[in-house]
Image (cartoon, rainbow, N blue to C red; front, side, top):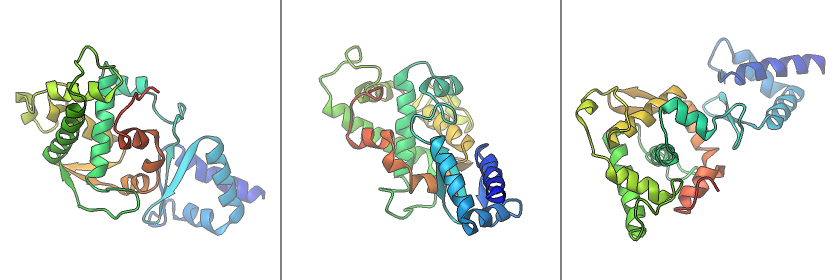
Length: 237
């Protein structure tokens, strides 16, 4: 039991700092094997992660961990994300969330389907966001910007509609800002790359194994999925 506990804590210490444990990695393959070969180690790690509201996923013989919904210790609060991304308003942050959602749909229509493309271009992401937010805006045409709650999808749709597709700074492929639709797409893409969800090559985003692990297991059980699937409401609710 003591040996299993020691190995479980070693596995947890790697996963808790955002690193992955992979059978294909010389440095962590022994931990991967220990996790699956020793039932006590497996149970201790699983229980520890559960108590800390962390979720463990596997994809392509690699273990990943991510914060569970509402985990303010290992995850981000809305205020954390606004500060990190240079955003001021809730509707700006929820626009970023919606762009993340659309990025997922570029590769999966649901978590039980296979990946449908190899990569996506930033302009494809902008077009997808525009199409779905236009539909939401059309369905709520009676609302004005002043009437729309800062946390509503109507406010997000109105914000996107007010943005130009591009500005001159968008010619710099690394430029991310709140000044245009492409700027928001780049801002979101940079964040997702920083979280090891994508690798960006010029204007193309390639999903990582971490992205697939989360997309195929986590997304449908999250509050964001429920919110966007039901097409509206208040994200603060």
